[in-house]
Amino acid sequence: MIYLSIYSKFVGGAEEAFFMLWNTAWALVLGFGISGAVQSFVTRKEMEKVLGDHKPKTVAKASLLGMVSSSCSYAASAMAKSLFSKGADFLSAMAFMFASTNLVIELGIVLLILLGWPFFAAEFIGGAVMIILLVGIGAAVISSATITKARERVQSPEGAFDPSCATPLSLQSSSGPHIHVAETIETTNSAEEDVSLKKRLRNPALWSDGANYALSDLKMLRKEMLIGFVVAGYLATIVPASVWSAVFMSGHGIFTEIENALVGPVIAFLSFVCSVGNIPLAAALWTGGISFGGVVSFIFADLVAFPLVMIYRKLYGTKLAIQLVLVFWLVMSIAGFLVEQIFSPLGITPTDRKIGVLSKGVSLNYTTYLNIIFLLIFAGMIWLARNRVRLGGGHGYAIDPVCKMQVETANAPAKMYLDGTWIYFCSDNCKERFEKSPELQRKTATVPASQYTDLETSKTITATMQASQAVDPICAMTVDIATAKYMSNVDDTIYYFCCSGCKEKFDSSPEIQKQAAVTAKEDDMPKTAVDPICAMTVDIATAKYMSNVDDTIYYFCCSGCKEKFLAQSKKQ
Image (tube, rainbow, N blue to C red; front, side, top):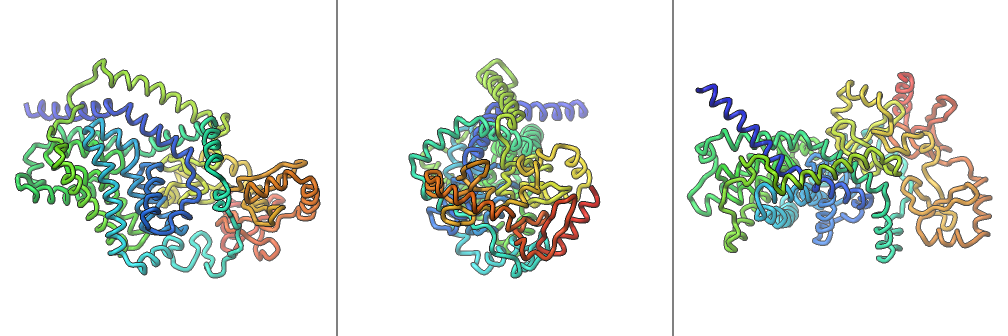
């Protein structure tokens, strides 16, 4: 009988996990699909330029940008670190991270299916409250000196040296490309933006990139979701009510609500599960007796899971990491508690602790029909992703070889140069795992370079190094070729411009075009190159370190980069 009981519990837990997955399958496809499309159609190249402080308007922008980003907690923490290192305000970067993990569509849809509309509403209302608390308490607790030290740390782990090549930052050239994208944006009126959006929506390349975003996010989070559903299934069937009663206080009014809200993030810290994988666990906690506010604070607390706390410590130092975790815990708990106080007087706090999908099984109902429809949509997404090169997509993107997330190369939090190819990662954590795994490196070497690096980059790194900048023939401004939005092709020569005004003036004047052609011939040889190891711009005329490999001259910022490059060349 004992063995039969154990077997029954084992099977029952697996069944409940499957039923939860079955009832949310269509919602996951919908959520990841919408998230992928938004990430493809909304650019983030200039986020660090619009997040320079933590005023209400800036924090609102950070939150909106976070909402259209990947819901993965690890990717969100890496992007926040990247924004901060490039000049974004620290608290705005943290607001971006909070929104990226708590205000995203796929999370809300799964909440709606598993726990009902009150939890769905609480997630977004409480998320806004939590971000406001984060900025207010963070500004009061975290000093500017601490933030300055953290910025120095993320920009250079050793505080004074570029980590990619060990060149002192004070000696590095500051005459790199002067990109005036902000001016370009300012010259674009709202009507032009509307037309541009319409054109983008008709662009199959962007839809294929959106499908690839959705599939790569799904691959990246598959383990988190699987763990969340399986653990939730067994918690709902095996753990007796007495265990939950021992963990969560009950029957003491407001003191119960406070204690539960404080305990919720602690459980999240110990669970090691984050992002969408938290929702099935939240459902199990709700059936176990934790208060409404406690469940909400638990859902908010995916950013204090233990592995992420270790990442904060590594990125920002022990002192700031401790402050961050304490502030996060406090604002998550307060937000959960406040949401319950807002909902209770309105009579909308849920009371039914049964999860609607448990033990219902699979039947021919609306869920089955929706799953069939979205399975077909999912097949279409797979087709778009597999044919994105033929559809013109993939430019400016790479796939992280560790977690399989699609990464925007211009904003990649981490990258490394390996065997003649740049490899991009969603976070420093993935890069470290890659560096420590010869097996991953061998697998990466056996697949086409375009899978893990930007398609244009994979065609020829030499071309990038030899022509990284151009000069606007109208205003003589230096334009970065990789990010240039305006260009013209005249007699097989491409000219790059800083804005639409310069391009229009050039296109309408044959005399200017003629003079530009003469200048182009005189300036045929490049003035700068890109170090293939650290990607630093090097002035060819004054370069001290160079090497000729296979009749191609490579320039380096320092002897360390040259030696590393030659060592890699010998391995090939």
